[in-house]
Length: 221
Image (cartoon, rainbow, N blue to C red; front, side, top):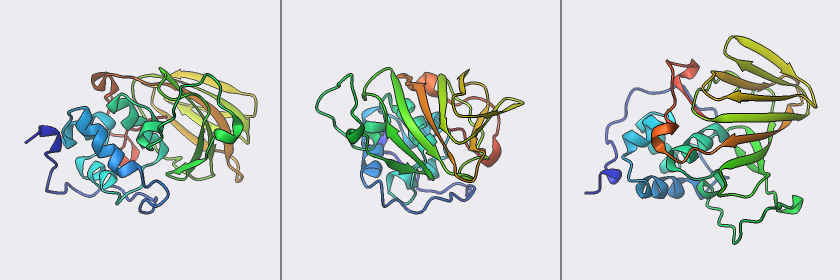
């Protein structure tokens, strides 16, 4: 038996409840997650550990019982050495340098909405993101890589380590993703921002580092 196919039968201790409903809007994600894990020759346990998830949670994502948030998609894309576009089953014919506005299809994940703002398959990934007020604001993330964001609309709360910032439209931030960070909308209307992050191709360098975060999760963004 291929060790990448050896999924755990037993479900570990339950995690904090995920507010996302069972996946309906992202039908291509579940089979893609399993296929990409097999292609990377990773067991369920190894892939989950690299992405900062429990094996049980990753198993539920692969079977479509849970909807992955955008940070989870980013963490899994890093783990499998691919892009969010491929996780979503998108197969663009060409890797154009220009992405036209009509081609930017919105995708909802974990309460956030994002649009691909750059060509897939590159060493960096660019997104336009809308964060509703109250969505995922309590999740602290730590992982390898760099991130850059630029606020377009609304105000964004950014916490880097022990320092909190409120970013207004026109403000930007560029930071090492190993710094524990948290992102949330400051206004009831939410916030829109441009986001660029590095895509790390090696699962070994994609390990999320640090101790236990709130909710026990270490994700992307």
